[in-house]
Length: 126
Image (tube, rainbow, N blue to C red; front, side):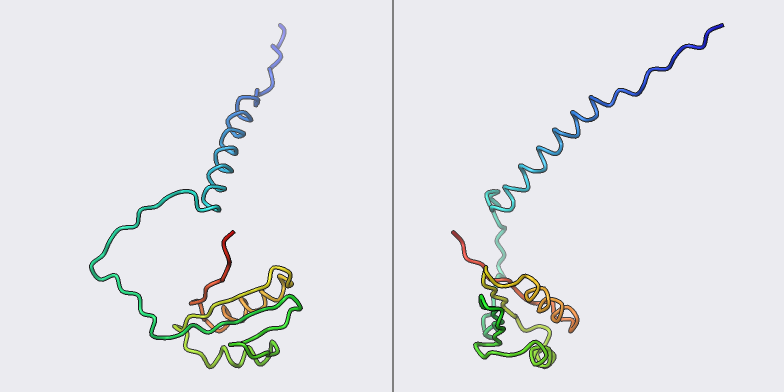
């Protein structure tokens, strides 16, 4: 009696399906990143945006100098100044495209460490 030889598992159709799914995910993610997916926002009768308080601006220039409301500061004094700010105050982060990403991450870490999560990252559109 001869034992039949078992065929291997055919994974070619599985690879084809995964490549199609990968192509779909990549194409949709580029639309989202470029903002080309249009979203019609709902209306609300109580849509009120308060601009009473001017946001605090933290800027990193191309030489990695840090500015807190247009005054140059060191990272340690920045920690102290952020600790004094109310957590609900909006902080705008502006980083030069040629600055080190590490400096930007240090500032975000300081904000997270102090429990300050109301911040925005400023960019400019092309």
